[in-house]
Image (cartoon, rainbow over all chains, first blue to last red):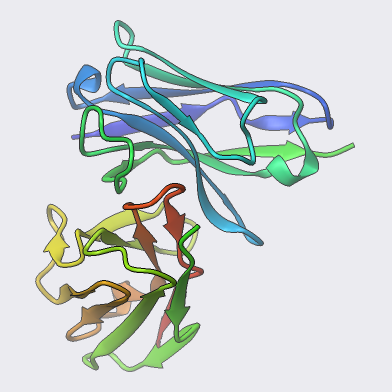
Length: 122
Length: 107
């Protein structure tokens, strides 16, 4: 059974940093692209970053480009998202989500983590 | 950016009735549309991919159709457990985008 366990969320002041992690199990992690999708009541669902199976190709939404960095450790079946210069509008539930392909980053999301809440406020 | 408009915003039906949810794209997305179900307090889960393919374990009462700009998710006979928000998503153009959702309420 595919399992994605998100962690690392919390409360941070504007300008601060957080690192999210996603521990994957139940599938061959090294074979699949992975993504971070966030959800807010106001903006809905937004895919903010993706990474190919080998970590070479990445994608960032304009809203986070230059501030967030996605990475993966295939030896530890772990996906990460380093978030810097956080803003109030980054407040959201962040989900790790698995893609169905290895290198094609434009895709749907066939499994989702349980989500981790990030709150950015002074 | 491809804008996905879902209608209606809310659908209130009795168990056993047929639910028809619409997703309209601002430009053609061929068949690159998926549908997700999000029950209250839960994570979105994949129902349909590539417009009409059911994801693993999804009951046959859920079906998807459409191509180009107009897509439909049909729940043939509603069950109480189908109470949720349903989202469509396109994945042919960057950025991938989601619709605003249709809330299905079971009377």
